[in-house]
Amino acid sequence: MKPRDLSDLALRNLREAILRNSLTTLGIAVGVASLVAMLSLGVGLQQLASKRLSQSGLFDSVFVTPKMNLRGMGRETAPAPSDKPPRLLDDDARQEISRLPNVVEVYPQVRFYTEVRYDGKPFATMVAGMPESSKASGAFDAMQGSFFSSPAANEAILQSEFAKELNPQPASLIGKEIVLRYAERQGLPPNPADSHASPSSSPDSLPGGFSVVPKDMGLRIVGVVDTEPASGFGGYGNGRLLIPLQVAVTLRAAQVNDLRDIVRGAASAKPTYASLTVRAKGPSNVEALEASIKNMGFGAFSLLDASKSLRIFFSVFDLLLGIFGSLALAVATLGIINTLVMAILERRREIGVLKALGAADRDVKQLFFIEAGIMGLLGGILGAFLGWLIGRALTFGTNLYLHRQNLPGVDISSVPWWLGLGAIAFAILVSLAAGLYPASRAARLDPVQALRYE
Image 1: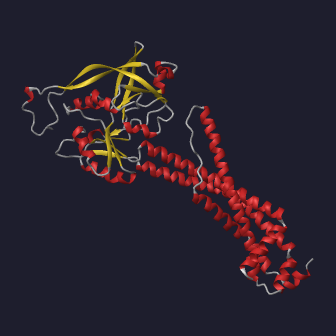
Image 2: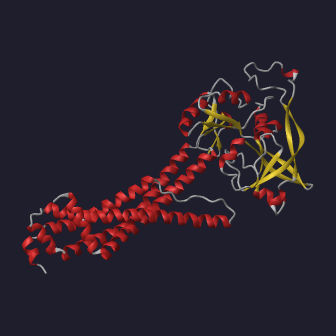
Image 3: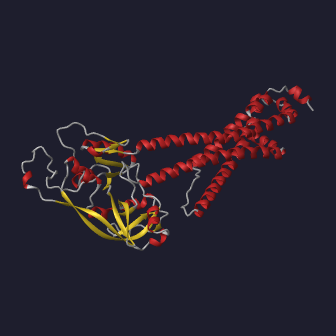
């Protein structure tokens, strides 16, 4: 039989039992919809996590520390044996790192414990300098108030818990003034008594050291944020008072690493940093950049291993969602088998006439395969659309709940083109597999017995 004749005959047979075939097609659609909806949740959550992490800059960043300060699992790592003293992480090192290939920016982690005064009362806190690029991290999207007006503005953003210590109504603090009290680091001239210092000592290690001078600075509160983006690592602490990084650097505030250097006898008149953050052009450049920084004599690490673990987690998560979603499709498969088996019983005479007129067993099989394929195609298209609608409904409900909690909306469901086409193709394959037994059974019918059946 010609393919066109088989298609016309299959469509006619489907129309004759339209209610039963429609219910079977609907069963396929429900199975495909559950599969698409579950997988769309996995894809949407993975895209959401990847987007937020990419915006935060964590996976395209390398964190640099002096080798003697590098921390791992709560312990200090001893520097490798060498005749050369450990390199200082100062402005010279920062400039050298910034000239490496594929480096977008290099900025220091400026954090220090200090005191602020508000309404005549002192409050101890941790100050952190925020680079201008942190505005795009996504952490400030739902903040109260606004981001810094300029990189050099004397403005502050308060962490919400710290803001509640100042005032039970954090929003009322926006526009108010606070006084930052900090210890400025000032270098001292070399001590003549130390002129016979060991020639092997570092040229940056000045015997004169530095002094600490108390200073005050007025800041205007411009916003309140829930959490600090990319908060302190290596035990340096989370910032509760955020100021522009450019302002934090010009303060020359004494930090924990300065006191540690004094105890070790490695104090320097040049300002040093506890750590630097190096932003690469992309995650693919991080590994080579990390190796280059280590060859310069610094400690370096990145969070690429965490991203690999995240991808593994979402792969397993998607697999589990796909398995549970396929259960409904398995039920629909049984419906297809039942429909086609019933069609064989009802159409035994028709099958006998076809075979008596010269139709081969292959033609009978193809006829039932076409009927199963059409039901799979229609059910797959309808199911993919229903799955997309379910995903949109879940996203709408989630965003409605987040809005009531004063949180920003998110897109937790995504149906990319490959998922939609894959679901339709999968529905067709499952339908053809379900029609395999009925088609083989119909092809094996004896035409004489079929014509005598009533």
